[in-house]
Length: 191
Image 1 (tube, rainbow, N blue to C red):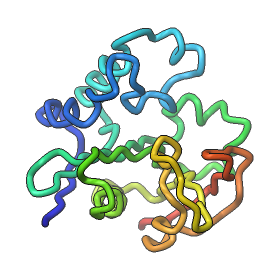
Image 2: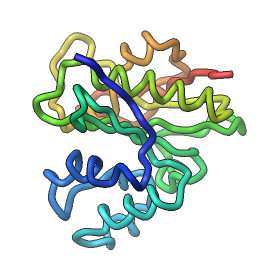
Image 3: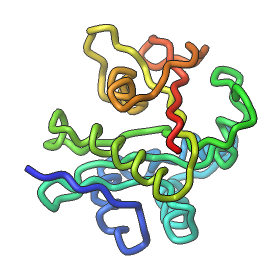
Image 4: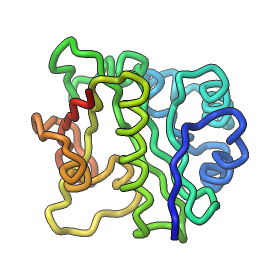
């Protein structure tokens, strides 16, 4: 089994569609953090797909695509924090300093590819992308399931232990929650 990770670019749109289309026209399409709450709510059916397509075309890349044995298997969404409108306004996930960071906000792994190392490969790909593009700091907001199973719907933020393995530091426990568990603010200084 081989896993390759590539930036989401316009020529990979069909692969992105394969990853997200199962969620239908009301699916998130990794837009939740990219818009204010009201803009996200008012976007309507199909807006997630349209917005992601535009972001892929205009850049900076909104995320990474993982391929397992050549098949589109997963997604990691990230962007400069200052472009993630909901994070800019967040009362529960604070901005801790003025350092420019790219925020890792979600993972999506297709059924049939879960528990195969796809999310781990995507996080490694994000670190490689940051190094090669001069991004000094990656930030993430995962949960620590503390040995309990977590429904996949709440695991989209990732698990703190995976970020630990990749050298991220646990900076603080935020007031945000996923699966009733607090989300950590974690950072990795890449350069």
